[in-house]
Image (cartoon, rainbow, N blue to C red; front, side, top):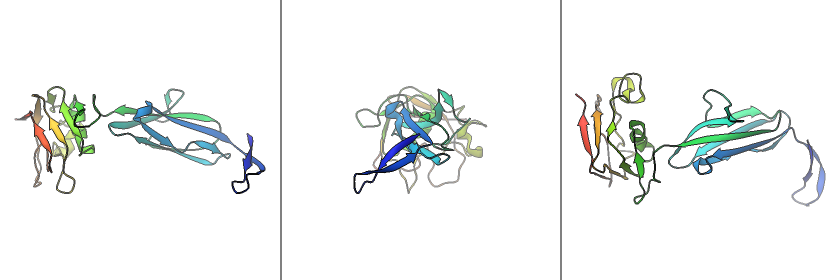
Length: 203
């Protein structure tokens, strides 16, 4: 592809620039995050697309023609510009509702979402139902942590400063096998409000 390019200082079209490919990128859903790095590139020029999730969302994968571009791509996707391409960065909500404010807290529906509180320590949360940690803390699952069990949320350098409203629900099956000074569902809070929640320790 050939396009005229303009000298920004004079406003005069100076010549022809050979474009190898036009790379487009967009987020899905649109509110899930933003993408950078799209544009026009010379033949075989390296393209680096960067996907950044919005608060309350996580990056899932890059897709093209509704197919993953690799089994488990990172948020940054690099490739040589060889042809026109349209890439879509797919994001997914980290919680089952809400926006993380005091009046519209993130809703927590499972163990993975409860664990995600540590990602946004200054946000507000509410349990939508009882949360059972039994499977999440079992061998082979993310919460097992090489036998250490639940990782307390917050510490003395990064405390939890938001709020958690259990709304009368329970967190079931909590266990911790650590020697830290800060042990519990939360390790360290600073001005946080935690209320209306029951915690049942695993046998």
